Length: 494
Image 1 (tube, helix red, strand yellow):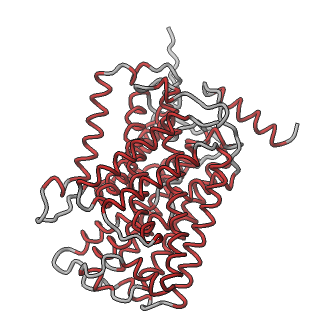
Image 2 (spheres, one colour):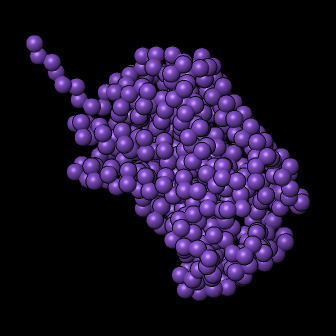
């Protein structure tokens, strides 16, 4: 028996020992798995979506939030690496929380995370829409933005329906586009269009002159907080990767290292290339990215760059939708939510869960349409998306810490050993800090109170709806799939 065949047999046996068999094809290579996480994290999409917002709020020093958030999320990725190595089951945080704690904790973890994934798909496509309009030479407006976002969701859905191999190929292609968009474009800006020295990274240029700069920096750090998730997507497709206990932890760490470096590089290049930073801070220039690209590459060159950027946004949406559909499928397979009979259906010809994929297209599309009645829709959607992801992450991190204290000893192919507990504590501390930053009110006296607290309110609504669902609908606790088996059970002696 060849080594690959032996690994596939071992993978099937391990999955069977966890109580599952799979219909997915293990067609995703190690680099394709990394590319999925990388394009989900998407340094280009993340930075281009929030660069103008962060620079206007806190000036160039906002770049340091990318460094801080990267270190914090690395701790989370290390905790997730231990868990996925032991429980390589499709769906990511939901099955991990199920094995570490129990059914109801897992249900809420998956619910919050799934809602956040839907919001993130909407945020990415909505954030891409102005670039799509500019690349096509269309005058931007709210209706144009919505139409472009819906078009991107539709394209991502069609590609995802083509199966794991096509998804993997698209992820690799998106990874290449990200590298071009990050390294080549960033390099050209630094070489040929640099307007400032490195000292600008420590100059606020008058940002937050009327208030505390600390809180302005905390608000602008949304760009860092929003940037560093996506590594968990490597584990969402665990049943599609050969030898997942070894390959997925490596892919998660590579996503943080390489994706983080690329995001910082892109941000550095853009900051130093903005000719008039005070104009961005004052609100005179609300599109600094487009301005920089037009100045550095000319109209035609800027349009070419924008098409490369669009590929990055599309590949990010693809990866997000793949992760969301696998989570919804995992819910359905365990009979954990209304509509499970549809969500767990699997296309034998496409090797994808069709109804879970459709759900991952329809809900983000509804969120995009709802943005028409909201001011500053991008920041609000991104704010809730990041909050929901962080809450979902920290529910798993907290479940892992509780399990460790109750005797859980990770037994997968990747283990932190004696560093497991301190890394787990650091991951929880960072996550709670990120959540606090996200739920802080906007502090703008010119807008309604509910707009100031919109991120916290949206998070509370999702949690309350989830709690009510669990109370009134039996599926939340009815599932008989394996759960709560990470912690050793104490034998009872008569």
